[in-house]
Image (tube, rainbow, N blue to C red; front, side, top):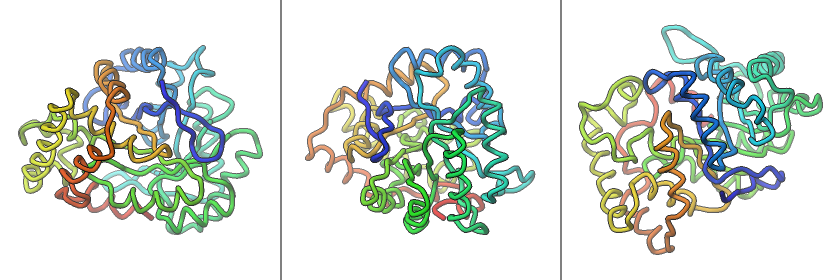
Length: 325
């Protein structure tokens, strides 16, 4: 399993990790026993980067990881996030106040059953709290020995710079895929300059780039709320995916493998955390590590799905207000 460093921190993770959100029923019903088996199988296959959040199932996801990592904690880099709060009937709230930072970390440590979190992210930037105050509180967690490294999720370049001036940021996490990459690539100009690692979430476009969603009738559950999957946008986005399917067929790999190989070819600073509930999907994703792309092929893939070509926002309008802040 190839590893990549997250910035200049010395923290190394598998180039392909595992996003754990779907293990809490986000994209269909999940079974805890099956999820535990999946996580352990992922470790057996060399994946050591596991990404969760206190928001995934509002604590449930961290508890599943606790059970899966029993006796295997030293084999993984454990990342979790804080900052989103429940707001029944509306978009999630955000809280980046120093007191909440401490409270949220203590709660995650308890649910995870660990003494230290390897990588602790602010999940969403709180526009009502100066980032310097939030990161100052996160720095105190490092000083207390409860957190090893700090990260930000969906932060704008100027926010990243201000945060990094308070305490070194190890990683920034943003949606990054062939379909949605403009904000990520803008962010990477800053993270590369500062020596910060980049963690790409939803690298398969929430399943679109797998090629498995071929017809609008297949869209259900959480995906139905996302503009990219809504009927007005589906046909245009499906046509983009078809371009990737054609190139993948030429390369003798799956669309997922081509999309992940393209992403990893963007630079050694990039790692991916595709999510799934299925072991066969994990094995398919790991197959991307065997897909070699020439610079010309990378350019051809980029041109097949030009930046900004995807139809529809990457989140519903209410949730878009909380990203890239």
